[in-house]
Image (cartoon, rainbow, N blue to C red; front, side, top):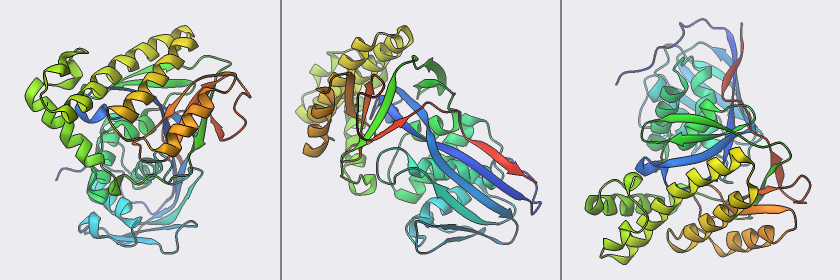
Length: 344
């Protein structure tokens, strides 16, 4: 395996921070090279410690046991405790020339669909000395997550964390890996509300959905290039629904990116409603609790639109609203991307 260039072992103190992300629209399109519109948020994960030694040891106040990973590697999927799998995945992908001992602290709720695992991966990779550009860093951390979890995730979460732009959402072409900042208008609040259901992709039907999309593509070609309605030629009704979601969601992402840039929040809200309906009926990744929360938020005065966000099967709902309209959850602001905070 070819590893990225890393800084030489110095034994110095280092700290790195990576943001979580909320996806405004464009779920389950990145795995087929489609377009997405996430934004890095002002909540994230910090990894701090000192380089040196023959293993990577990371402790978290949220975990009873530390993650202890030898530099010689091993299969990340078998590391213990469970959270150490993500640490082991990053170690395997970065290939640091020296160990590290430190702590991890986060302001991201785990299992909420705000990319807590991606933030950990990106912050740890930087702390271990990875000096890739944001796209290469995201790709390595994507592979780390796949190795750790066994879930064939796309690159959106890691790329949004690595490439965030202050004040902007990111229009990401997941095939060409192009990132275009889209300014979030002043006077708009993005609010994230937890459904109360913890999301766990490793135990969900995520891999099945990806396989169904790939089966649809084997018949009709790349979904990222398909026009709405072209999925009607698929004989299998399940594949037809999966393809319809991806095709129409790609179109909605482009509509929302333009509308957001123009301050057309009515169009943004309408597209968010259509997106959630598609995720519920065509992709079948929502839950009754999430649907009820979306309905309640969408009916709240001052809320332009609401939809589930993330992989589904629980987690959070995102709302675009006037300031103060949503009296629950947390307001998140578009943040800059991951960065090294301290080296000395």
